[in-house]
Length: 168
Image 1 (cartoon, helix red, strand yellow):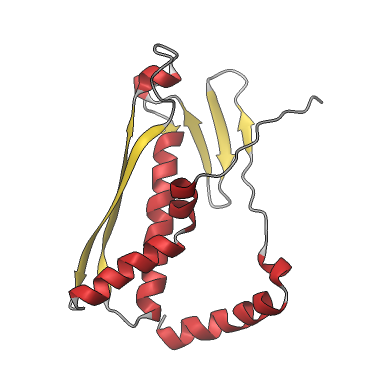
Image 2 (cartoon, rainbow, N blue to C red):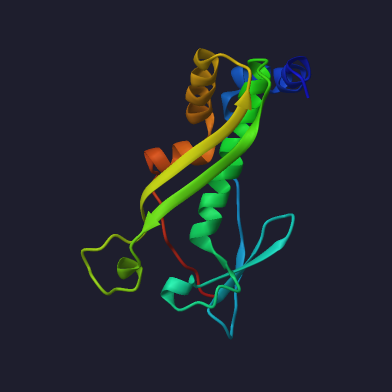
């Protein structure tokens, strides 16, 4: 896809969202089914069924997906798609890879130390790029990728998360 194709695809959406801001506000959903015998949860991604379980550092076997890994995978995917979209808009020829890594202290999630954090304490995202573009253009590409990456901005800014339950 080139810049003109991207702009043609997004133009009617942008116009609609300018005229009807409420139309741009949607709710994404993810659903999982608790495994009744194992410590696992099956999540339907819409493309595949992913079975998530405990990380080996918390007693898992490593045979099931780890939700922490899935979070980093979502970040890498979102950042990669965002970078490609921005590069297309900027008419930059860019190829490469994206890498996300995060630091965890499993004492927190296992309840070993109440002062240890539960969750990531740091996340790093790195692009290894191949491009003939100028350093200035690549700096702008990274700046805009960071600005428009939904998962990255959600993690960086934090959002309220409400836990609730219902009984059937």
